Length: 107
Ligand SMILES: [Zn+2]
Ligand SMILES: [Zn+2]
Image (tube, rainbow, N blue to C red; front, side, top):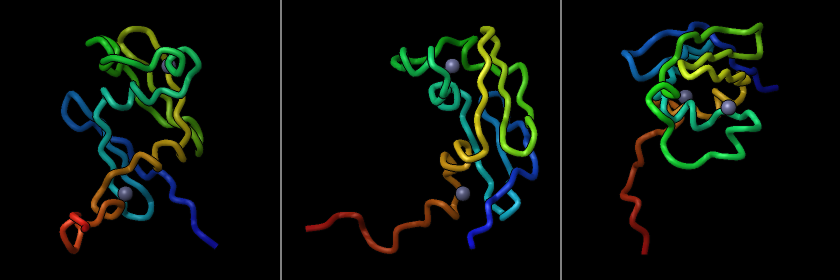
């Protein structure tokens, strides 16, 4: 049985990113711009093109919502509810993307 990772800690990473430390040792960094672009709400999915404006890339709140969710409030008034699974799927830490052992070029 595979153990589901849970969030150990949310943290700020400078002004333009947030980070999540996971119970199984993964350490994710999420640039705010790409987080905002991945907002799973209906209105964002309908208009997911272009670069979000400056206010849309600033967080005013980022907190856990129970065991399974993370709530983000943006400076432009938008609110996003991410599930833990969604955030975990976006993890790009070293454990998730091991260095290639050989060149990617294939003939
Ligand atoms: Zn949205
Ligand atoms: Zn990872």
